[in-house]
Length: 414
Image 1 (cartoon, rainbow, N blue to C red):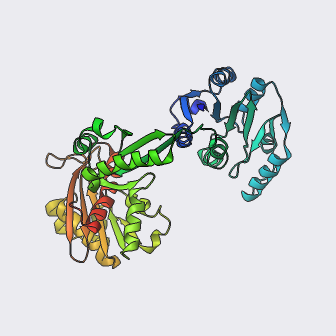
Image 2 (cartoon, rainbow, N blue to C red):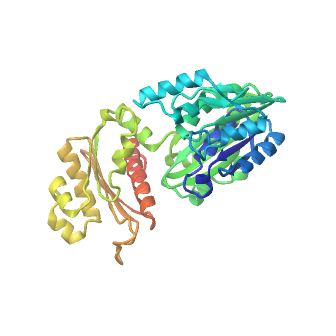
Image 3 (spheres, rainbow, N blue to C red):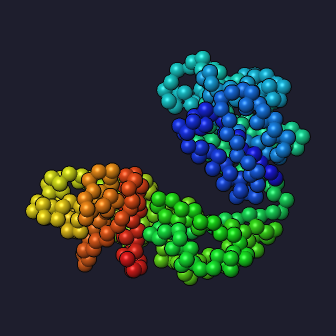
């Protein structure tokens, strides 16, 4: 089946909001072998929305739109759907009951805006919204499917996962598409490609895509066949070849994050960790504690941003900072050792660096970061140069700190 994704909203066209909905829907449809022909974004203008509906519905088997289902004046998708299908808005009691439930959960009163949400185009099938007041809507016409979903990602994702994917999973005519993603970190895309070797030889049975990001490079292996056995074998063949060359840099697969992988390692080995952060400003602690169950291994995190806080809270000698500077190997070591000692954990980790855009010196450039690691037997530091973008320096530093711990635990060369 062939699909078109239409995302609606002026906020998307002006770049105020990143269009994550389209990415999520496209990836979800691809997993069930529905081919996405195009992704179209239109503003909050009825004529633009209507023309998009007309054109895409004539050319595709499935249309999925997001956005414009709220109760405000610029939410005009429902009215445009009525015009497209030559129908009218009618009150739906099931939708009303759901709106009442949502308002009760949020301790909110019934309003005219809430009442507005209970009206849907006549003739549509309701897609329940567990997390919000705007229902999804399904029309079937001429063996084609038109689906309208709310633009709020949290609400849209639930409807895609629980309604849309089961609906279309049996319409693939025997065509199977599978993906396997290998998550790497600590190596640039060009060096990773060179390490892996001849890509043409590698991809005779499956395709391979390099997807770089601030946290690393993801390798997406894709295979298509009419047999699950064939696609699984093709993906396994390519994965094994990649791992034979670059396994040390692969920390996880598919949707795994470095913090999830690290958490599993720490939990399995009954290890505890504490973090002292300067340039990362608490980002490492934030990422680690995003993982459910992290209280088993994460003891504490301290942001020691100023020189005084490093001395007062971690015991870093003042003369050490004066002699070497806060951004130095010596201070990174003292921070890691200090946080481990005061928290009584198995591992202490630290970051200190120059995130920019100011603070650089001739011998300490923007993006210079020292990461310290301490355990019962080791006191280790690593030096990094992460560029001149402040936010990327923080992201890359947090990733590198967790990767350093992973490598030490698994006894991989650092």
